[in-house]
Length: 282
Image (tube, rainbow, N blue to C red; front, side, top):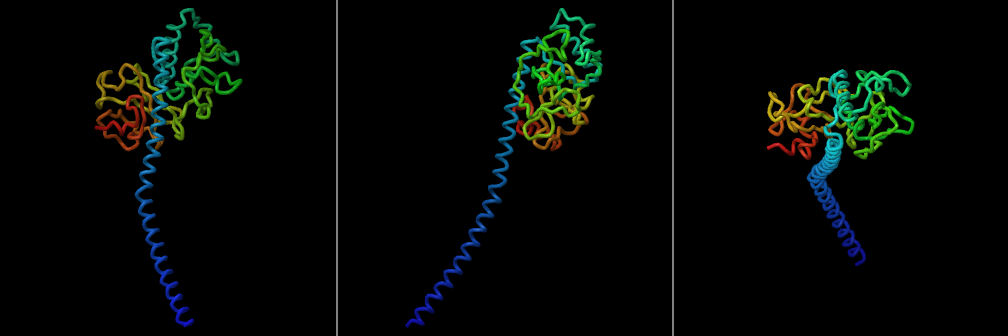
């Protein structure tokens, strides 16, 4: 009886081991299937969350630019053109807002006591945001780190910096070209925000930003024929390169919202799309 009983136990144990192995394989197959289904969903949710975070920040910067206009009567120059034209626009802006400004003295203001040639400042459309909205130096003692001054004689390096209109995350400020002026980068993206003002749309993109990218304004139809063909034709365009860190094809202007664009454009986030450009496709 013992032998028979023992044999039965052994057979039952073998049977249980076989069922367990099959169940394990089934469970593994189910897990693999669920992973295949859920991973893209999870990645899509993460992408959407990142884009939403950028869109919120774009909206906050846009509000700061609106506040700048209220305070100074116009949107700031974007430094996106030839340096000589940028210098002339800066002169015009300072003259409108600081009536007692002495241009001759203005040009004598350098951190080393030397002569300032505004034509050679070298700011661009990616450095303009912190210069106009930052209101403070990036690091203590770094006088040339951007932020224009209330002092009409020292707009670049004056001690009376304007109060910040936007609270920049200093961990995301970089001086890529070492000129003392900082670009501001969206979180987790290797290309900076770019600011383009409407008065310069027709010639925007003639000068690359510090990363070497050419960024042009979006239009309602392609090619533009009049100023009203541009999106935000009386305001500005604030452009983020998106999670792929590519602004898109630099040849010609891209049409919004009709599209389609090359893939590099679709995940760009702007102040007029309130999210990615792709999300506004009809």
